[in-house]
Image (cartoon, rainbow, N blue to C red; front, top):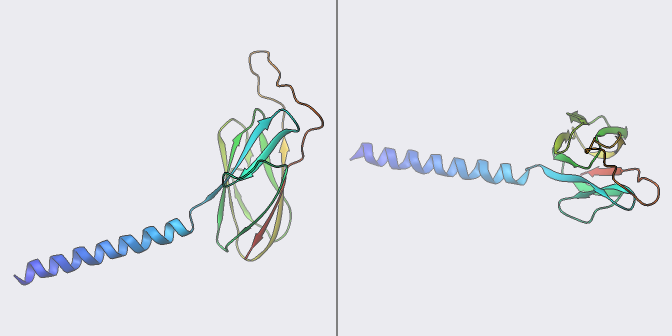
Length: 143
């Protein structure tokens, strides 16, 4: 009888621990910024399924992680231009659906841009755009 009670308590403790880890992980799940091709301005990006813009300013919590997905018809290299040094993994998004990861060590204002490359070869097709190409700019305020 005591063994069954101990097993139930151990199972309950494991379930509570798993629930705590899931809630902590979801609170700090990476947020996504997606880069896409568009006719006017060539490319833009959006944060967390928001509107696509050339310039974004977002606020995140300390220890946040941003995930960049390149859905553009050209490669992009993520580059930091100002602020405390952030950790960038796989900054060279050199194919469609490439992912870069950005992590922040602490509070501050961080600024980024991308360096766009040439369009990917598409069977001799060139993607047409209107106007000058957008320069993608991102300001991240970490609280």
